[in-house]
Image 1 (cartoon, helix red, strand yellow):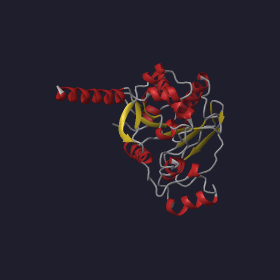
Image 2 (cartoon, one colour):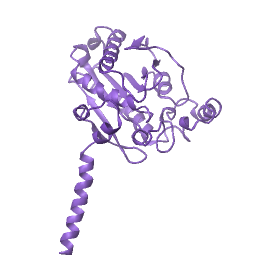
Image 3 (cartoon, one colour):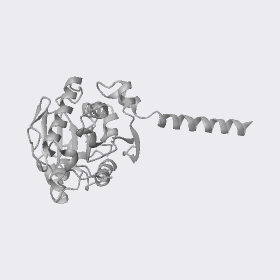
Image 4 (cartoon, helix red, strand yellow):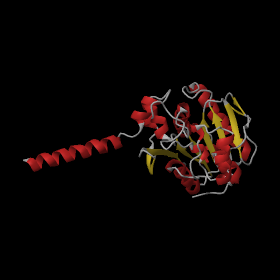
Length: 283
């Protein structure tokens, strides 16, 4: 009898644990993120990756991939955990990626990572940095990081703890995961969603978009360890950085859609109307 009870308790514990894992991220995301309905979150069909945050939170991802892939685009949200609107916009854009019917846009493989910093996002209150106190957007291996990152933090930010770059590049599991995804996925374009400065930034080759929705281009420069510096300047992959106007509220649904359409239009013009014929076929 005692053995039977023990087995039953173990089985119940296992079911509870696996049930929590199977529930996915929507309980947390819907509770935390602005303008996010459960139906939209569940329709996003986020997939668990093998990567985990400092506190063991799953890093979630979603691919929207056509059969005939000619271009790869990586979309990121919540690199800074207190920029809640950025994760919401990324989730809304998953739906738009699935609905887009323009012939050339159907050749794009979209990869969404809506919340790179779940520990910061789910903290109360939300925190810009990860659970180790590191600003993930200062933790990428830009040239001369060891020489410049700490000096910049000390001199330019006056040791602002919200902008601590860490002890070495890629010291954090979240930045290592994104770095590995960049190497595996080999994106032609990276779109990184932030808040709350209400501008559009750009790093890397190509002519930048002049505006997305109501956000106009205002290039603010590069920083040691930033994704724009690493991806756009060092690796030559264009990085569009979207700074939403508010970290706690998303733009209206129509505005998010307009930003999406403007992004697609810029991509079409940047590559040219014959994009599917001009880009090499990729596996």
